[in-house]
Every structure is written in structure tokens, then in C-alpha cells.
Length: 353
Image 1 (tube, rainbow, N blue to C red):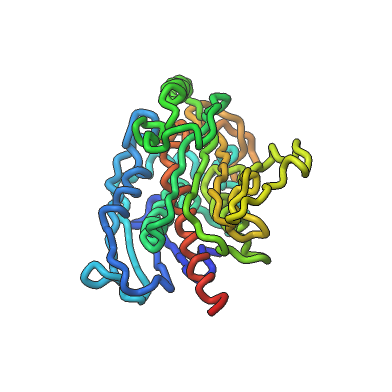
Image 2: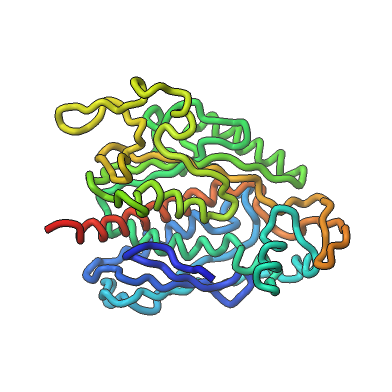
């Protein structure tokens, strides 16, 4: 199984949803960095279940324990190992799907690929895997403290923030449980999710991420383009269905004379349809992108499906599930972006004397 993120700075992970623990090993992390453990745990707390009434009510502390690579609160340059113990599994909630395939889940494909599947909570396909990414990304953010990364929920279903990120106060992202800085829209989003949850259904949406203060020159011109690495990371998030940056798909409606970003004398540009990246390399402008998430596949309603033998059956979700993945995915998006940028920063140090 392919199980590694990063080019120079790399993360290898392990763990399943109902196993003993999740964890990972981070290699090529530079020595000499003082670690802010509270900052790492803060990001994990923003991702963990049970934090509000619009996410799964499963209770997990998600406390990270570092095993190696850090001595006297300082990175040593050796691989950083960590674990996060699983605490509140209820495997019985999944016994009814041991021989059944849930629609739009990884059940069918995992079974066909490996000939065996851990049906408890989805096993390796569970979104609890993202805890590992948050730990690695929260550490990586501390390698690039001058870079500001802020993600927020910009759409829930057909409820969309009309203002751009420049027109909103992003310091308000965590003032509501949906993590949307447009406070009026946030209340509408929260109410919509509550309604959907009562119906035993789920809903998707969009997370926008804004990255400021990235120097010119990060990213590779071929195969490891900065936007490609960001897209690769984001598209690995459970329930992610799409990624675009800069003008994205909307840019297809424009003409070149309007879409081209005209330079100012200092090298900045009058517009930023490029989304801070040109030729795969950062240009010093804000990097911004959007990540689309589908409705969570597990719904608490009966659906037609098949079992392992191809027989028609009815399957219905049980237990504790998110009606909307968005508020808990915000720190995942931020953390993956930080890990990609730290990786690109370290690679860039090797490109010229």
C-alpha cells in the first residue's frame, strides 16, 4: 500500500479506525527547532470528534504522544515518531455491514483490491487517518512561522459566501462551530446542517484556503509544481471531490487579455488570477485554493446495495457519524498545506547557492 506523503520532508503513517492507535514517522525534519506542543494539540483539537452539535458525537481525546526525534523540546534531526491512541471505538456498530457494501464507500473497492477488508469504522479508509496528517502539518507549520495559512468553510450545499476572502475578517473563522468567517452565513449553514442531520442525511460543501507570505520561488517547474503538490495532498482527504486554485474553473469563462496578471514595478501583480503560482512556482502573491467535499457517504437511512456475493440487500448506517465533514476538515486542509509548503521550502534550499 502506498503510504507516504512528501518529496524530501516525508510522512509515513500507520493505523486503522478500530485498531489500537494511529501514528506516523516524519523523516528529514531539520534539527534545532523548538517544538510548540500546544500548537500541535490545538490543531488536533480542532479536528477531533465531539466538539460541537453538528459533528459526530463520538468522544476521543486525540492526544498525541511523541516517541522519538525530539529531545528537550527540540527536534534532533532523526525521524520523529508519534502515536495517537484510539479510545472510543464501538465495533458493534459496524457488524451489520461485515458482508455488505455501503454505497459510495471504499468497502467494495478495498475488498476487490486486497481480498480482505476491515469493516470496523472503515479500517484504513477511515477519516481518523487525517489525525496523522494534522500532527505532521502542525509541526511543519512551525518550520515556516512567517507563512500564514487560514482555511474556512465557504459553502455548505447551495449556501455560499458571496464575499471573497479579502472582504472578510478571517480572524473570525473559529467564532462559530462551522468555521465560516461570514457570521450571518455561518448561522444559516449551521441550521442547514442541523436540518439535514435530523433527516438522517448528510451534506457537502467547499473549504477555501488562503496562504500569505510565501516567498517567490517555491515549487518545481516539472512534476512537482506547487499547485500540483497542493492538489495531490488535498485530493487525498476523505470525501474530497475536487480542487482548484486561483481563478480555477471560473477562469475558463475569461479571455486572456482580462485573465493575465499584469506586473507592478516591484514584481507583484495588479490582479491575482494565477492564485500566487505561475509555472508551478510561487510568485509572492497570496496563494488561494478551494477544496470540494461530497456529502458523507454514511447516512442513517435505508439504501439499496449488494452483499459480497452480489445479492441485493438493504443497508442502513448506524452509530455516530458526521452529517457534514467540513468543520473538522478545516484543520486538515491547513495542516496538509503547511506540510507541502515546508517540503517545498526544504527542496528549494537545494536549488541554488
